[in-house]
Amino acid sequence: MEILHNFPLWAALIAIGFAQFVKVPLAFIATRKFEWSLLTSTGGMPSSHSAAVTALSTAVAIEAGLDSTLFAISAVFGIIVMFDATGVRRHAGYHATVINQLVTDFNKLVEEVKSWPKKEDVEKRKELKELLGHQPIEVFFGGLLGIVIAIILHITIH
Image (cartoon, rainbow, N blue to C red):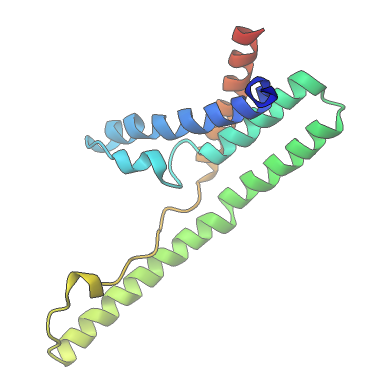
């Protein structure tokens, strides 16, 4: 199958997997707790989105050249993804934090004003995900990781 020999695709997928995996030991170093949910979560160090798009662009550059249309497409795509990770998604996370606090405060107020019976677990609210985007340093290291992974894979495969 041709897809099994698609170097840019595999470089990007391996970069995503490695970036997600490395979040667990990095978080352990900081908190002394294993957070296995980081394997599938958004946000955090390093950015797996940035690792993926830079690995993709690096692999395309290696295979098709820096002057190719494919590299131009992957580079612009990567810039947009990385800009979004540090902008829109990060601010959406800040908004989620404020909304969650407002909901908590409102619920406390309602409980003090009225004595509501205890709710069942199925009725409890779900908090919005607050860790959506990335700090610029997380995007930078995710991008650097993607480039390094693509170059290492290219050297070892070819």
